[in-house]
Length: 112
Image (tube, rainbow, N blue to C red):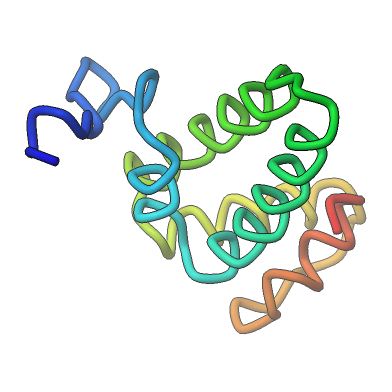
């Protein structure tokens, strides 16, 4: 496989575009905590697609993670984590420590 056969993110006005990025490229742009979550979800939807012969959920999952990858690449890893902390702080009215594990922060947001 050549580099031309594996599309990567393209740069647009707001940073790299992941609109046609492969699952591997998307995963590579994620922070480690979310890469693990991506792996779990990807395996689940691929297993269901194998049984149902329907790729709809696979494409929906990939599109969702493409958005996360785009945000992560545009902001950087620490700013991406800080975005979740700000959202959790606004939602709960609590101050969220900078060293709080992302899984805890996401649970505050109902995303875990």
